[in-house]
Amino acid sequence: MGRREPPAGSSATYTASPNIALVKYWGMRDVELGLPWNSSLSVTLAGIATTTAVRFVPGRKRDSLILNHRSVTGPPLEAVRRFLDRVRSLADLREGAEVVSNNNFPTASGLASSASGFAALAGAASAAAGLHPTSRELSRLARFGSGSASRSIFGGFVEWRAGAQPDGRDCYARRLFDEHHWPELVDLVCLLQNAPVKVIRSAGAMQGSVTTSPLFSARQSAVPERLRRMIRAIRDRDARALFPVVMEECDDFRAVCESTVPTLDYLTPVSRAVLAEVRAANSELGEPIAAYTHDAGAHVHVFTLEKHAEMLQRRLRQIGGVDQVRALRPGPGGHLVSSPAPAAP
Image (cartoon, rainbow, N blue to C red):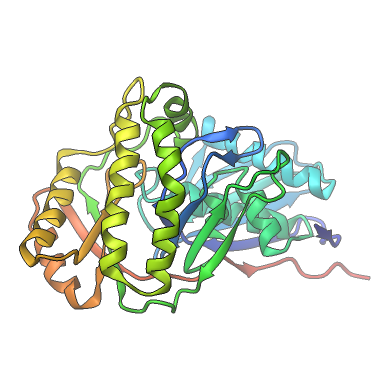
C-alpha cells in the first residue's frame, strides 16, 4: 500500500453507501482476520450514504467520534479506535484522530450502516494518513471494521470472495456489474415505525450461529449454488429467475438466525407483514414480480422491476407500521470528497 507524507494535521472526507446482501455472509472462519465462511453478493444502493471526515491531530493521544452530531463513547468508539490502530500501523503514525461521521438514513437498524460506516472510515482514514490503497486493498482493509464494508467500496452488483488463503490475501470484494447494468431494477426499502435498534452487533451475533445453529452447516452447502444462480440471473437481467432465489436465500438466513441459541429474531410483526404482502402479490399475479430480503434488522428491502414498483409501493404503504417506502436504485461505489493537500516541498 503506497504512502505519501501528508501535511501535519491533514484531514480527508470519504462517502460510501450501504449495500444490501442478496447472498448473506453470516459467520467468520477467522474472526481476527475478518474472513467469512462463504462468499456473498450485494447491491450497493444509491441515495443513502455515510460521509466521514478523519483528521489525525499532532500531539493528540486519544481518538474521538462524533456520529450524527453526537459525541460517542463506549463500544462504538472502541471499534473505531481498533480500526484506526490498523491504519496507524500501516502508515507508521501515532497521532490520535478526530472522526466526524453522518448517516442520512437510520443507524444500527438493519440498513447496513456498519457497512457504509467502515467503508467511509477506511477511505477517509487511509487518505488522511497519506496511504494510497488500490480499491482491492481498501476492500481488504474495510473488512476489519465490518465484513460487509468490503462490498461498499464498490458500486453496482458486488461479490465478496471468501477466499481460501489462511492470511486472507484472496479475501476481497469485486464489482461484477456496474450500477447501470440493470436500470429497471428497483429496491423498495420499507422503513418501519419505531424499528428496534440492534443491541448486539452482527459481528458478535453471527458467531453464535456458527456454534449453535443446527442449520448452519446445511446453509454452507447450499450457498455456493445460490450464488451462481443469482449471478447468472443478474447477468441476464432475468427477474423471474432472480426473485425466487433471493427469497429462498433470505428465508434460509433467517432460519439460521432464529435457530441460534439464544435466538436471533430481528423481525417485528410489521416486518413479517411486509414479507407476507410480497408473497401475496406474487401469488395473485401468478409469477415472481418481487422478492424480499433483509439483513440483521427489522427494515425490509423489496426488489422489483420499475413496471411493478408503483403498485407495490401502494400496497406496502398500506401496511400499518410502515413509516415510508423509499425507491432506491443500484448506486456508485465509495469515493473521496476531499483529500489532504500535498505536503510542501
